[in-house]
Image (cartoon, rainbow, N blue to C red):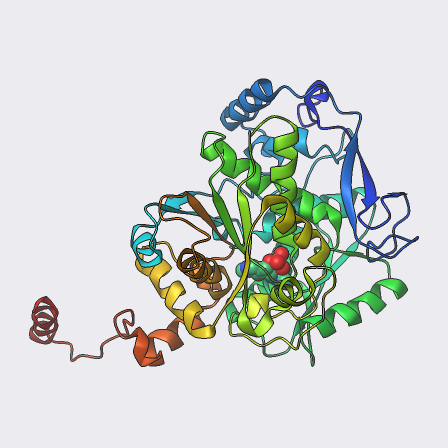
Length: 442
Ligand code: F0G
């Protein structure tokens, strides 16, 4: 047996694409992964799976940690019985994604008013964001389908990830990003990984529109999160989180919401694990947006999640500066199914939360910090109880956007004075340094 394929008797089933709107099987999706019949989004579904045997699955996945096979060293493909999407004999493009740590956040727990708080740090992936967990699956499918070019519109992390995986696979990558609204760390990655990078004079939503037209005229495989194979990889973060927590779900999982692919993917992972008997209940999955880019929050408040109105998005958490999220229907389903909350937080709250996560020695990029800012609100409203267990999903590494961090510490608002640690300029004199230490001790 090819050691890289899923154990057949344990696999979740044979994959096919299903429309989330009209429920039909879709064999020929449009270039942008819409249902040709009704235009709605697609998801990977499975039929005819083996008898779920949670005990055997858990030990098989644990055993693979001792293997030296690239597919087993990946924290995504290690769970391949839950994503048997590759045809037999085909290998994945993997940079050993996943395998990310769960940290305890002591200082942040106090700030939020909960007894214990944990962070699943997806910024510890190969290119510094959670996107790698979905890029390994979707880019592998691009190669299976024989594409030479892949492309995405991005606020910076998808493009960094796609550029790396495409380069590693020897494929060509087209990146469309909004001019001026992207963190330097992310833009530099796209260049370093040799992608063809275009800065368009528009925002993220405008980049999506342009790319939609490009793929109709040029054979390029779309790697935005409307690509359902992206979400299949990203869902394994939920599996890995449960394995790390001895398959005991926390009461709450909190994620940032931008284009709403990640919340949808994690929700799918938890739903499947429940169906397979790997876990016995669902955590409440809550989604937090920036107040200046909060179309889902508005949709839930004003239309009970039945429809969404795009907004003109503005936030310094540029990763989630998105006004017209592609996967909003899937995210609404996750909120309803898990009983999660949907909140938004101000720019000031994001800045403080990011500094607090940094001061715990963990650090993250601004978009990830909305989770802690949101948790504080949810504790205040009573939705999260102090003795409940909470896992924040930190989506990006703190080095992604150092400019944001520098600005906060150099010129942050007065309200943040206790958190601000600007660099101190001194003469090259031990006395001056000791002086400073003594002043800080008093
Ligand atoms: N956090 C970070 C660091 C992100 O980069 C993104 C999305 C999100 C959260 C939101 O996740 O879109 O699945 O709801 N970044 C995309 C990009 C849009 O192009 O890099 P989502």
